[in-house]
Amino acid sequence: MAQKINNDLIVCGKVAAEVICGNLSDDIKRALAEERRAELAEKANVSEVRELAERYNAAIEVINNLSERLAALENNYDPTVIK
Image 1 (cartoon, rainbow, N blue to C red):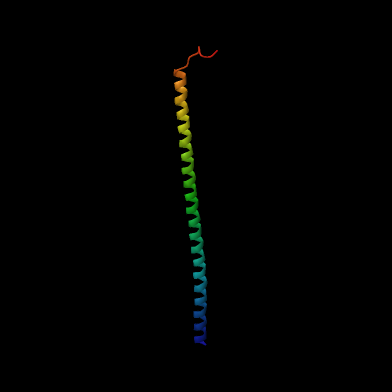
Image 2 (cartoon, rainbow, N blue to C red):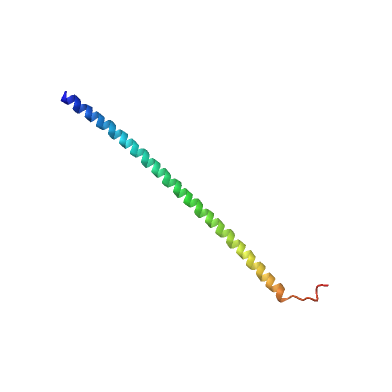
């Protein structure tokens, strides 16, 4: 009788260990998947910021070029040309 109880406890222990390890394994997989999603989101944000910075820099170049042209027109303005 004692041996049967001992065997039952061993079997229950193994089953419990498998359930716990399975749950831990699922938790680890879930955590790794979440971490991977966070990394991908961060990379997407970085690329979006980089793209916006490039577009901003291009716009600033256009504004600077137009400012230079406007300054040149103002410096060479001759009101007698307009009739």
